[in-house]
Amino acid sequence: MSTTTPPLTPHLHASGRSRLVAYDFGAHLAEWSVDGVSRVWLSREAVLDGSSPVRGGVPICFPWFAGGPDGDLSPSHGLVRTAVWRPVPAEHDEVWAWEISSDDVAGAPGAEHVPGPFRARYAVSLRGAEGAEELHLALRVTNTGHRDYRAEAALHTYLAVEDVRQVQILGLEGAAYLDKVSGRREVQDGPIRLDGETDRIYDRAGPVVVDDRAALGHHEVRPVGAAQTVVWNPWDRKAADLPDLGDDEWLRFVCVETAARGEHALALAAGDTVEIAATLSHHHSPAS
Ligand SMILES: O=P(O)(O)OC[C@H]1O[C@H](O)[C@H](O)[C@@H](O)[C@@H]1O
Image 1 (spheres, protein in one colour):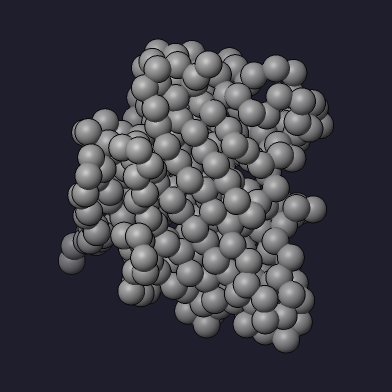
Image 2 (image 1 turned 180 degrees about the horizontal axis):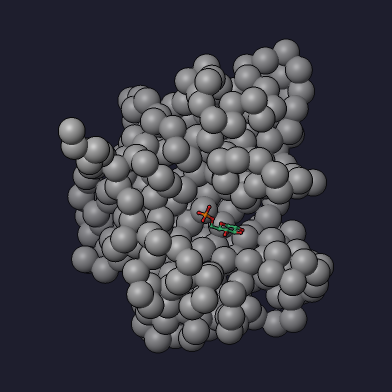
């Protein structure tokens, strides 16, 4: 008997200069390219059969980030990342939209850690401002229960870069952050330059500019509704432990994540709806 898992069925969309690929699994936007060049990065070793999370694109983390407030929850980044979302009609400039609720994940591993009943809607939109292509990602969460609770969330964006060692990240100068590699709290001194494993939770939302100097271009991430920015790259040694990352692929991305975790988790009063969103754009020429 064969144990091969069939590949996920992709949604494909092309308009203007943009091309998008997404899956119902995790409501995962896997790729965004403009004029054939990746802007949102996908690992060439990404597992695309639903047996594990997709490495790259924009994983949705909810209702906890990483291992949650105390670091002991699984699956990592919450259980909607590996759940199949229901496509729902797109509105306005949306390309795709999906929904998922706590009922949909009842019984899934980790369901016992869900802080309360919820309904989530996620939409991917393409917006063009003066010929520039912009990608807009919005996660809206409703507390469908009768009790207030808090939940963590993140849009875990993998930005494609030419060489992460030459990138500088602007917009977080002077921001306090938790360095998850050293375990220390620090304050960002000047632009961020990466020179080793980087896993930091900044207590500041963007806008953030990723100056990809080797590619003579820059990304912009403009978040709404979340107070934090996570910057992550595993670097060579940690990358070698990740089976879904090809050799040297760690050079080709930096994650700049729009996040609400820990004391900045989303406050969901009974019946309330909150949204976290991020708009991504890319421009040629270095950031000034
Ligand atoms: O390997 P994953 O579960 O996709 O997580 C990848 C990374 O996500 C975030 O950036 C976290 O801050 C990191 O600690 C984690 O290693």
